[in-house]
Image 1 (cartoon, rainbow, N blue to C red):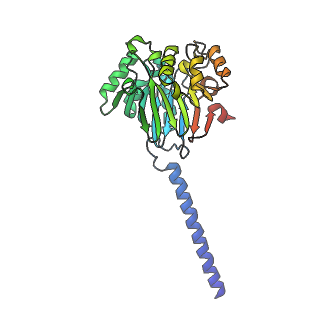
Image 2 (cartoon, rainbow, N blue to C red):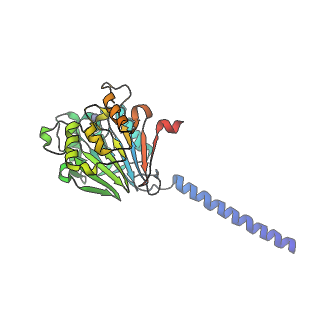
Image 3 (cartoon, rainbow, N blue to C red):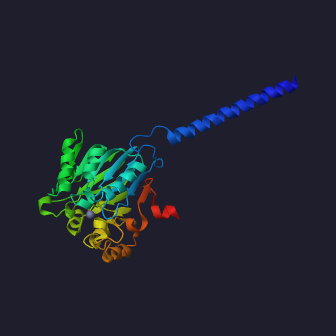
Length: 309
Ligand SMILES: [Zn+2]
């Protein structure tokens, strides 16, 4: 009898263990292959954190912000299928098909090269753009694509100047462009945004140069203090004046530029200025795509190169 009871007890234990193993397996299958968590699909950011991706799309800008289950794209990189595939491949890898915001900083082709394609092929809720217009085919195609799409809320950045937009608890304050954009060149008409998550700030400057930097310092000097600066105009000496960096006081700087680009970006003057202020510099031409993660207190930076080590 005792032997039979032991056998029964053993069978019960095996059944319980099997049930637990099945539950754990089901949980992992669900986590890996189950439905996505919204716009970010299956890609998960660390709990309570925001990620800023500076995508290596060669010479140009394309930044992606991930917060909760929402995605914000700033610029698209240059014209051409090679550049476009770098961007769409990156978004595909993260399973992103919806954008809460698409921000077009200014109408130069190295920023809106694939803007029409993005508008046509992604579900976008809001577009923020500089009021600066352009006669280029790339710009006109972008505008036509926007006109074709219904349900996109198109926002002129200057109508929201000095105001904050919230995506969850992520605050995006619009600091530029300031002044009559008709009189500004394309770069100085860039949408400039400072993003705040908890006690951390990331300053995103498009291609803003000296003129725009002076206006921003004139209006928002007390608010420019940031942890991370996306350096203006790919590290050109026409941006990142000492008078601007002195107020921005970044701990880290990200420079988005192509390897061996025709412009010599980043320029030595910019690198010297950043060195003078003890800023740690990260470059997409040297490190590939760069991901800045903040939990509201602490910043961590990873790049494709650092992950390969
Ligand atoms: Zn540019």
